[in-house]
Amino acid sequence: MSIFPDSHQEAINSVDRWLRVSKQAQSLNPFAQTFVDDLREMRNKKEWSRINVEQILPYRSETPRLLIVIRAGALFLPIMMTWLALSQVMGPFALYLQNQQSSANFLWFWQTNPGNSFADIWTLSHIALTAAAVLAFLTVLTMRISWWETSRAERTENAYSDMLSALECYFVSARDN
Image (cartoon, rainbow, N blue to C red; front, side):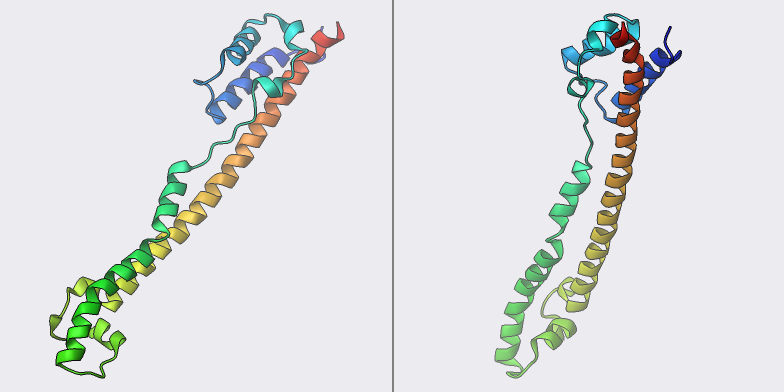
């Protein structure tokens, strides 16, 4: 008789929860799948009690890969937009200096766009506002990724710890015999 009467069902529930949280339910290797199947069917308890469960069901944490890739790609977007805008404004500014006013200020020219020398989308204020919006998006995305990673890590650590404890309670009686 075990001092943990519901230990078998708790072990099953904790393993199922771990597999769900760690997203391994569909990708177990054959050895791990045999372990889980034997646990559910109460087979080979004594043999499994001698195995290091952490090697059979390793700790695995999920990362928000897509969000990290988007953030990494978008980091240089404000710089690229600025350089693209500069490439669109430099030629018209050179013509303006040559034909209109040789002492014109580039930033004034970039902002005011005298004579509609270039498309309004490339004006300094538009580029600055767009870059600020991208940076705001990146700030929110970075905070979201950090929140996701920390909350996910806490949940994953708890599920893994619970699973190891439940399996230990289940297997302890097999080791005593």
